[in-house]
Image 1 (cartoon, helix red, strand yellow):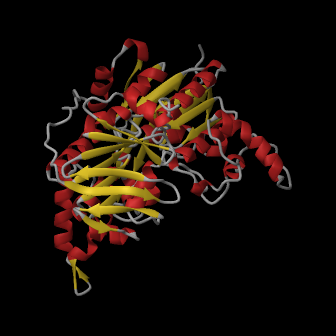
Image 2 (image 1 turned 180 degrees about the vertical axis):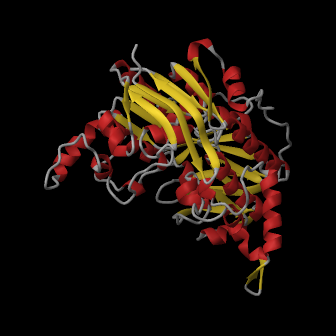
Length: 496
């Protein structure tokens, strides 16, 4: 069978740091091909070179057996290549429909805009992606999971023969993943190829035909999915055996650290729970169930219309994030790029941002103290970086997430709301973050952990609060709960 795409000898360097070294990759027609590796292995770089978003320093590409040069996204689109980026490349203040058609060479060009025709053009692609919303909705008003579906709908609208998906399930709930995989299988049956970049082994083995592993920018090998297993792929990724030690035994105090009663905002309704000292309380639910919105309410970002919150028995009502921080509440947001980090600032500046006043006197920064505190926190988080002075944008996704976590380690809040902290990071970085969560809980902190991965909630949490439509749907003991029970509560399968 003639390969749809072949890339050979791909090299890419950034300021002397190698991202890809003699990488090779191929895709067959109608194939789902997983591209895996630890953070920094070069997966996203290779995918972006294929999609024309980056230019390789050297290397060759062939399309249907014919040599091609892909120097821009427009070149890739003309060939029939589309990409869904991990850090979504949407225009947040344009509408959903406008994001689907802007730069879309597959759509007929007209000298005027007919909004009704635009709506009609976009609806089939939005429905195919599983997104029910008005095409004229501004993208910035959608939760990140819905924005990911907008990006998917846009890729479908390009009529591509090869779609590269970089961590496409990172913000999707279980039902959203099922819908996406059904769509991928439909694309496969129609002869469309999909490159699936992911860290989620369960999903990779469920959806892919072949798996290619990158490590340190080089291609380690390709395996037929049905002829390999998770242990072999992980060993190829890491160059060593990688195993999660599993959940550590810990004791949860009877002391109630945070008590929430009837909390209501414009987006959540009558939510109640207690968080004990040393407890990891999971927050589960489908996209739009109110998980992130609960964090926004506790962190003073969304005004309350009703309810009471007590910290160690004392009523509190944070009205701004600054006030929430002073009261002992921290929030690690779902979207690290837009809501969490200053991508143009250094690793050091991002790490100490929440506690900058601690290292200043009379308007002057005590740089030595700041740097030493950051270094210790970086070491504790197993953060990999060339130095504290590089821009945080140059780090891999997993290390960016660790910088964001370090910011809160330095701030030392009593209660920390972690909104999908392992989204889009590799198994090694996940293991590091699990260890940080366990250390925080052992130190008596209260952790609220949102995750789209049900096995992660069952592994890390003591109890799991399930939300549905912005309301309490149930509270489960993580030791005895099952994924089926969580999904039943989240989807109202149990309700009459």
